[in-house]
Image (cartoon, rainbow, N blue to C red):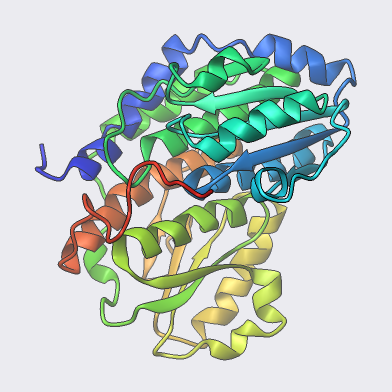
Length: 339
């Protein structure tokens, strides 16, 4: 085992996914019933940091698969601005690994008073919100001591995915278990952090659709652990203007999933390769010499899970390559106060 705490937590992700597939006891059926009976017209997510990246993922997934418009609401709209809403037809999802952020606790309480049905997705079954929310989904990742969230983020995505699949009356568990068994066997086959140019600390991470949600988390980890300003962009937006920034002193990562949006990203990637030598492609194809390759399975909805399981150890090792301490990101603490 490594002496690096966050690396050990990241390397435990395949085992935690396997445990999730076999031992998940969350009550998805009641949430699915609420949605299936058309009692929910839209979804509102409330989260901060890495959890807000999970919320962005949820906004794509609920819209794409269940036809539910989903809005990520800044907590300050309620905590500072004291805005009032009619949430009688809303499902409000609070995502918080610690479950202890004061602004999120207040948001859960106030949105419920406004008529919302509330779900808490948290790794802390002792959170005060467990006693007030309508539904609690336990991330059950084991204690996550590191400032940088890794395993809790991956399992948050699986909970969101499972809510959707149970609503669609589909069993995703065998697919999750198959993927986790592969990832356990593949644990020593990690992406090489040495292929990345360490002297450049600005760039883009480009994707679209669900991939764009994942790119936001990738961007956050570059900032948090590597002190690099790698900004997330939709490839459609990049082609409208920011593309002019691309040159050989600017890193560009592209992320391609196996969906309609991913096919467009793959096409845009081919154009970007012509503009810079610093193009790195997160892809299921090995066409680019700088490809960060991920394997695929029958169920394409699990591709983000595979990518993140490969990405986290890689970004941590890249941080170490840069001479940084990923266990102690500069200025950061585990629970952030935002009041």
